[in-house]
Length: 113
Length: 116
Image (cartoon, rainbow over all chains, first blue to last red):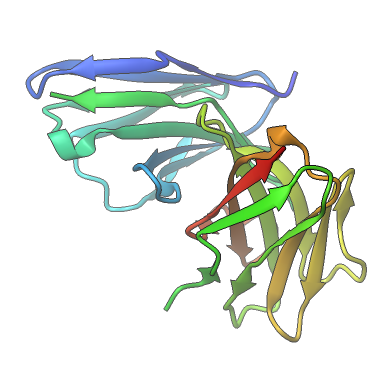
């Protein structure tokens, strides 16, 4: 099973809402990532969890709050977002050892109204 | 300065022909890895091929091959026998540092269109 799943596929939320994005993998990978991708741009790294601990935060605003409850699951909690936060949010995972590619999920298309 | 440069915003190729997508990189680290990903309009990033900085041979995966020219710091993707399903965005990415390093830096991408 080489699959990373993400839910929901699409999300529309208002600026005062609280919502969460979910990412799951059952490949035994110990590194998990959140990326943000605007239209026609490359993915931008937001957070990295390594062995369930936050290892990289790319100076992401606090309205984005990541959580890694266990080695298979990664959440991104959203609160008080702005319209410019509308984007494709991609989750990825990798083995977290020597020379391994990241496997990406299908993404969540987020629209903030 | 950009670490990964993809100079072709868009490329067109006829079905069944080969196409080369360019990628140059900039790093002073002797240990690095280069990746190519495909992103169809559906959004998912699909891993295609990997080349390590110490690999002696160019990487190949089916119809994909990586033309690695270390002295020129280029890592071009060659797709042979193009298919309509190859139409997508293609991103070159680099991992700097040892294999356990976690960050990938992506280029701006090349949009490939395969014509019937």
